[in-house]
Amino acid sequence: MQSDTATYSLDIAQLIDLAKNDPEAFESERKAALDNFFESIHEENSVRLQSMQWRIDRERERSNNPMAVCVKLNSMMWGAFSGEGGFVSVLNNPIKSMADQQEKLAPVVSITR
Image 1 (cartoon, one colour):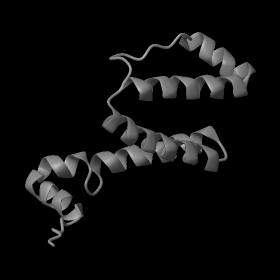
Image 2 (cartoon, rainbow, N blue to C red):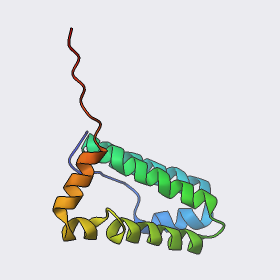
Image 3 (cartoon, rainbow, N blue to C red):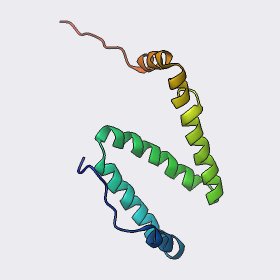
Image 4 (cartoon, helix red, strand yellow):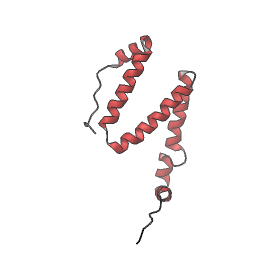
């Protein structure tokens, strides 16, 4: 973790201009901004969010148009919010959610000589 806040130099107008006129430069700036953000947060959160960003990037690659990406990402978001094991289910049944998390942990095996 480098700092408490991520800094980024380009404003939204510059990013829009890059996206329209130089998509490769825009993609480079997008990646730089994401890397800057990931470096600025706690490592545990960074790993989780980088994993999520990887999934988002794969959906962007697989899609044939921006609207399809938007629909897919919206579906992913709602799944994380209201799907099985999502935010709503944790709020509605926190004890079951904690038990489910415990089941996912590997058992500890003691080794004796």
